[in-house]
Length: 360
Image (cartoon, rainbow, N blue to C red):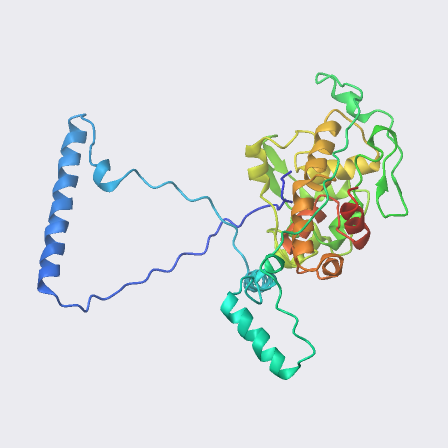
């Protein structure tokens, strides 16, 4: 699954773009004549290009028109509620970055302030802050040490039966809220959300287990079949697990984050044993299955939500900029990053914030 968090399927029906027509009210005859000349010139160039193409000669008019524009990648279609939510978050984020007063002051203004203050209170002639004190400092986040995953058993790619050997015990939960997977995973793979908590809270727009098609298996993926194999049940699974299209309002932080299954497949992140992606692997790993893709998936998690994980560090930076520990409770701060991390089985709590700021 992806970095900066994973969504399921994009709507196949993009919203048509609006076109605007501008009337020419200038009435300038010279400009009109110039426009006609330019149109005729371009028409002549195109006619020449067509003739050259019919003769099998190179087309040189790209110097005039340029190369063909690249096709834009399909963008997710947001509902009105999702769009409104994103606008609110963007405005709030911009407000938290805004500097309320200038960090530089001229000597003339500073001297004037001292003069006016002395008239009001002769006992206090404290000068204004120096220039160095007014400079905005970047937030300080302690460096963290990356954890190392010890080597484990090797599996033969020609023996799929080895994937279903005697399962491991389910993890326990430590006092700090983190899950404890015994063996070489201990203190390395430390999510603090179980798969059930992750999906129950709202992940992947509620569409992770929807009916879809696997380009890896070259066959459909059935929602009914995958739901029957889950080790937990949710009463509103049609909204949280099998929604036909991802909806940010179904997510924990009411924003959409991540990419589609098709994009994960193109990136080479999907393993045929878990054709839906990382979260499907996580469900099965949490339940006790061990196999040859475990190392890769755990390392991916570490790069996202581990001590040096890029999304975790990005969220820490936003929190520190917005007030530090007190900003953890404001779920609008870094909502998209929080949602992405949530979809990797990790929630930024005050305990996690304290650990990160202590370099853990």
